Length: 348
Image (cartoon, rainbow, N blue to C red; front, side):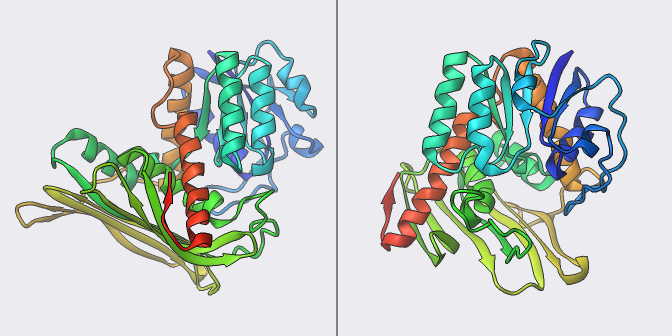
């Protein structure tokens, strides 16, 4: 039984908790938070943009820590799950690795490539795994695309376009602070940077045009170059200042014998605009792949957490959640910022 210490009891900690409860071979053995109400199991104040609201939870048999160092000193904890603000990811990950724990840290892995490199060095020194919570490859539409590509059924991957745009998150006062949250690329586009890296490998260069807000990119469109010049890959991501559409994401992926596309937008009042996952095949047909029922976000975490457990239990690091992949996604985000600032292609 894999014993986990959950650090940070906010919205993301709550979502992880729900998925751990459904996963075999793992036990939340400890929680760590400075909030005495939540240490007592009162999680009713937790609310997010998907999933159920927090509730009263039974923490009987779960060790409760208000001090992170005390949790790290607990020899029974094998994996530390970090659901903390982004600016704490690097220091907390390194501390946990130095204490001999495996680490599962929510995205972004770090705010800079330097932070990510420090985490990777600590993992190598400790001979422990660092896994990063990029849930996008587990969302039903993205998981279907990934598996269809890997199957080889539709032959060579030719490229794609990836979109992720939100309205200005006025409730997040530090969103545009590069030292705290990181801004739209590091906090938002990093999902698609990770997925692009996963599907196509590491680009060799990027050209980006965009708008800045302070020291971070507010919105940009990017064209990625690869060693294979036949790959055509682009993205559009960032923040718009109209609040009527809080979120939209989607993709169009081209293969030799199929095109896959999907689009979802959340409008004012929670209304959804959805172009369902569609597959155009080489015989002129349009198909609508059957996806699992239920909340797609919760289903993503319900697939991601078992992947974490399998990776640590078997001692074979997940290809989907590997720290090296997450580090490359952060590199791509900052290279795009450099391209926007400089107005020219940037080598990677």
